[in-house]
Length: 467
Ligand SMILES: *Cc1c(COP(=O)(O)O)cnc(C)c1O
Image 1 (cartoon, rainbow, N blue to C red):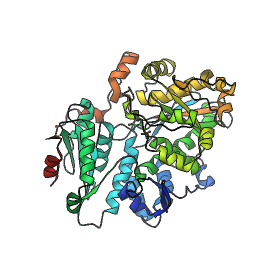
Image 2: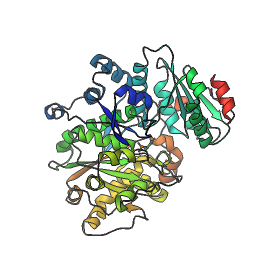
Image 3: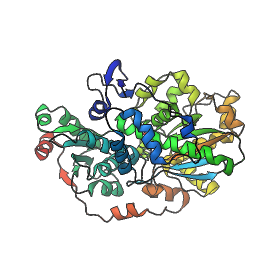
């Protein structure tokens, strides 16, 4: 596959370059595949549908062609995914796609674990280890640390602000041994980020170490997230005739979004032939993208803190990819868009539980609320010409091409549940009066020995430690 750059279409890069660079330092742009090959319909729509790992293999193949042979790709996928996404029906037209069955109980495991193994593969013939630096304000660090733990040829250093992340998050990233180390920095998240950025521009240091980053803009984190869209839409497509009496419904993916990496992965799956008719971009009070869809103006802003904190992003990095791949008019036909505030999020956790018995986390709740409001008059109002008010929680005024299907009760929703509710126990407790039970793997982490190394926030101390 040839990859190009969102800021310069003349750029041509291979997969290895796109993965190891992360972004194109010359242009500041992001790597995008030059095509999204469609998978054979006879293969996708066979009964029963292909397994998750089979789909992962078939979808990944064109993007690594000529660089990773089939047998190695198969090994990467087997090793990355000892777990699966689960699809849970919660009412006749709503399925929850649980993406939290990986080691850190969040959907980022799907992207990070694939990326880690691909990086290790590309580094296999080098004498020196690749050294990954990550600054984290919470969840990214644990997914990346866990994904790279014991992966050969790679060392990882995670920097986090001491005392500024939740006790569970801290345990999840400070208890690794071996090739993954955590530094608790006496400072803020911005101080951590500054240390990492300074290290990347330090020529002396870079001559000593092969440094790389592992953030969410990396194409090798984005591509694997498309696997679960394909898999879940095929499963839902095949089981709808048994679950409800709806003929040939439109399948809508409802995505709780921050940096919009997850949603971009959904677009890739749809391009490759997933039976998905459209998307709902659901955000919290950080509604930069809904505002863009509503007004046509893209204005980034400082992020505001919310209950769905992994979505607190004021300048979503994948806007750059979405607007490279599609015009605003195309986006308006594909996406419905919605935002809610903390009050709406708490209400959604409560209402979802009351209506369906399902306990949803505050991120998934934002998506559930979008789907619920849409079906209960929200879409109908828009079709009848209501312009809404985007400064208040709710839907943007565009009616996507599939909007009528919702009104005529001919659409089913797949709600992406991006984290286990036990990771946000206090919020869930607040909404429904009880805390969700902890999965074993989270419970165990709480009892592991803390190995974080205290670190000053000045660069010289950090550099001396690295050396
Ligand atoms: C990262 C994250 C999101 C946001 O995903 P994006 O790809 O940044 O849009 C949503 N929910 C959870 C739990 C996350 O960790």
